[in-house]
Length: 130
Image (cartoon, rainbow, N blue to C red; front, side, top):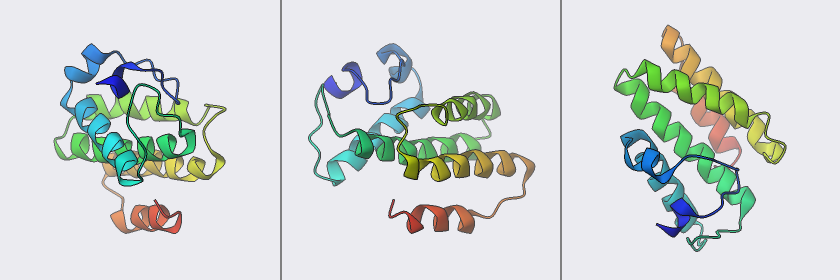
């Protein structure tokens, strides 16, 4: 709970009530926490590993977007794709995460049109060790 209510590396302003009220955001936060724990990073109110937190955030976004796409929740996906566009304007976004973030945008916009191969995205993530 401390991780969800403490200050964020990404400057995220999502309220706890919003997270608890959305299965997509709950999944996002769970994946983010699991990714950080997998790397041995302690989870508390002040998790101070900005690069790893951004990396976990990107992975969590991919899982969240995938679920929304599979469930056909286009409204949610559109909202979150707009959020992802703003991540590209974040001056603290580590440079090596620009391409994966752009890849998420490309992937889920193209899936909407039905013209995407998951193999490309998997290759982008694995080439970066994510």
